[in-house]
Length: 283
Length: 283
Image (cartoon, rainbow over all chains, first blue to last red; front, side):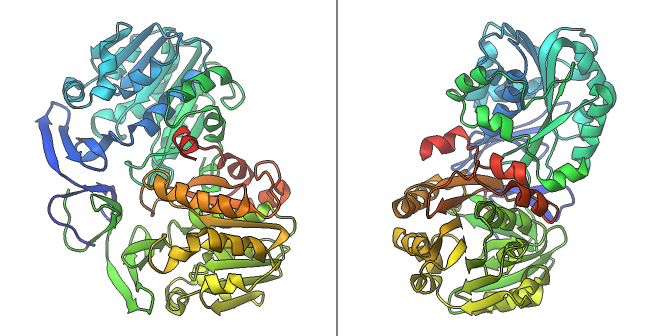
């Protein structure tokens, strides 16, 4: 059914099919940074929505699926994480989740685009207000450069990036992942969003291959996210010293976290690594 | 981004947000049965798409998620299922999956709308050609009436219905589920699609409550399906004599099935019952 001009459709890749579509009740913000177009719009069902270059980055209704799964899966695999880093993720959602782990003493957020942080501070306080926590350092810089300068520093690094095009393309290279590995402590874990297995399997396998080149072994996992194209998404976790993320994780901490999470719990932690046949076969 | 008039958007419930959206390359069929409007359209990314009353029922690209999970989860929980029934499911996809179980000797498809079967036979041979299998009986009748007439007859019954409005509303009542229970053999299992936990939790809990009234215990499970609103869907399995679907299933058969399935495998069977916190809390 065709709707009126107030409808937004995220046009997916080839332009034949849409990601999320919704009625725009109000445009709250439009800005152009050196890196991208940034918009914040309102929809009565989804809440506020952040768009970067016309792609949905987050909705208030759905952001918990993504931030829970990007952050808690690697964090629960690391014994008492203290120093942790988010690359990208200027909205603050990933930082907020990291702070739920009681051992965390320092969170660095390295976001290239200061305007994303400003827009988040203004329109998404439930995500960004964590950035005022005394344990958080906000660095506005290129994550690639930042990570290159770190050695044995972080117990967990979450790559909370946009798609592998434009400013974020370098965040998906073997070279970058190698620098992430070196920036991890011996017990450390990295996670990164790795695109949709349903609609972008070629991108997924390319990302996973680059991680494998840098880390040796990789562990993709899946979860739903209604506001991204296809609704089925993946992240991938890698360890400096290889571990089994299904067996080797802090089940007690996972159970405690579940009280503060809408999606993640200990059973989800293990089940998200059960991959459909079509995904197994593509790896 | 707004697209031209050749775009279809499935308008979800309140009309503020869309389900699947896509460019209609060609309208292949439009019909009006006594029950609903039936359309078949072509999209180069999704393949052929069947719409009932303007809602996406299946796409060639995605139907495997749904049919794998509606059928193999209950079927793998029943020892050597022989006589099985699909209520609804006129496209044939659920029947096709049931026939993959080697013990099956008789599949009854009870679909109220003969025009759905005709459209599937004409445009979706990869789903409907199973209906010519000698083990299959096609009954064009009201599933509610049909099930009421059966006692201790079926080892597995899959309710492959549209949403709980219009002609399908009766397929979600406690009364109907009680008749399904009586139509099952002692070892029997029922599964039914039970809507989206992401966007329709009230409907999910209402369905699950009605099943509980009829069966005593119920086991909801989740899986992705890109072509349905939100991309996150649920089915629920119930047993005449209660079983634990995570522990009590035929793992060997599940492993064999995985060779013929794009989604389902033994690990998926157990992991699909790990529910997010928001779903657990709502039950």
